[in-house]
Image (cartoon, rainbow, N blue to C red; front, top):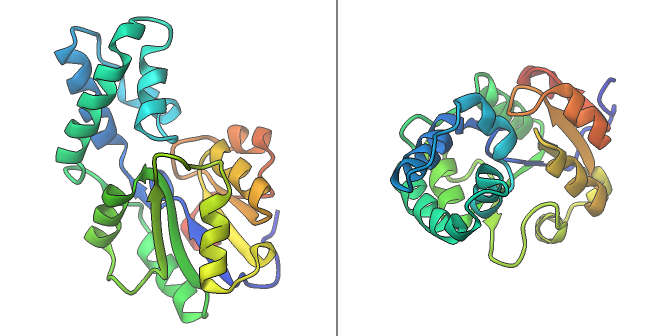
Length: 215
């Protein structure tokens, strides 16, 4: 499906799986923690379905119904280990920096909204892009994370843009649901962690295969 003809007033980008490929660092951190707890590691590809909603949700999915008594300890270990190895292998997806530059040149306001803790979100974004490229950078807090629309609406208000003329760009069903709840236009992307079928099933309005398709 073709994108809307009218450019958005703003683009809000998910971080992991949309702007950057962080999966190797996420998997390495969690597998190290599992090993410390005497549990089996998970293959890298499984983390595509485990990651995306923050570290507590990731740890719950890794453990599933086994070892519930280890959940809090795993969360504690994973936060510390991932924080230490945040940027070991993480890199922007090919074409992302070019895409961001094109959108900026067209006058589109840019923001990042991640379920990664706020301080880590800032570290990742500032590692790869100039400080003035994004008008707002927002990670999760203890009370609110996607699909809660709170931060989307806060960003739109701060940038003085209409949610209905804002694109929320992400790679998971969580991003699709966040867009629906906030009244923004969802742009699902398949270069990240989830396949097209997952985005279609979640109700993504538009789905793109490559960053250059966005601008």
